[in-house]
Length: 321
Image 1 (cartoon, rainbow, N blue to C red):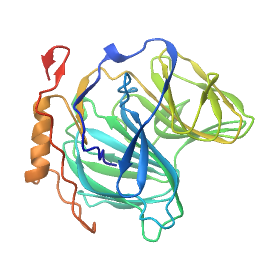
Image 2 (cartoon, rainbow, N blue to C red):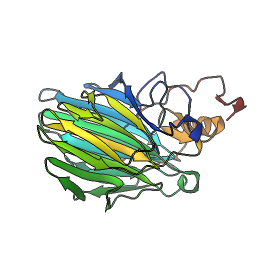
Image 3 (cartoon, helix red, strand yellow):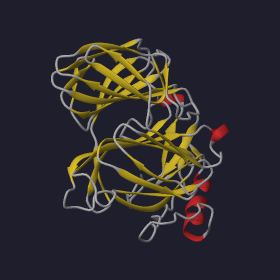
């Protein structure tokens, strides 16, 4: 999914100086962003004061939206570099196309994982015809320096491992949880899991104390470590936890995100993750005037133009990055 914000700002993310090394309960409110013609998303990361959770660098939650008489998701071809996109649906379908030739319909609880590496472009759209409701999340994972120039590729996994307890089913989307490992390729130690809880459930989920974590509420009413987390909000939990208390007052859907704190500082702007201001500017120029990002074939329409990069170079900790 694209960041369609026409006022996109250069941001420094990552670095252990931003990590809370102890358990906390920091509730993050979303910023509302229009995505395409009929989809509004709630952006949880990057957030004021909280840029990343492990390698997770971008989180959008959307829906549930009634798109019976709407075009639904319509995101024209756009570029990515230095990251992985994770598509996760609770309702509806999304048709993915990319410049490597991938063509895949992603359905609820199936993993669509695109590794941009050095450069890729893709589009996302609701199929025609499509289901009445659209509800899901789009997430980005920053690639570490050793792997950020890998060849671009796309993975689709319809079957994913699960961790279960009375009233709780945890589907492991990416990384590992309680010994269950996703088949999706991860380049840093991390956790991404979909948690389905039935009304009245009380459970404790095992965690890695070396990871930092956050929980995104997708639906229903749930308490995370005694904090009510409403749909479209996210609770940052810090590090140092060995378990996470969960309590559902109704059927509820959550997403658990975590990972080792990302040591490298990254520069993130629009749909690019790099290390320097110069890299970002070059990527924009390559998208607008070159063929580095390839061509998405079969999409009915033009591609997205990139916004202008701010004139002032990004400065991080007193240095031009």
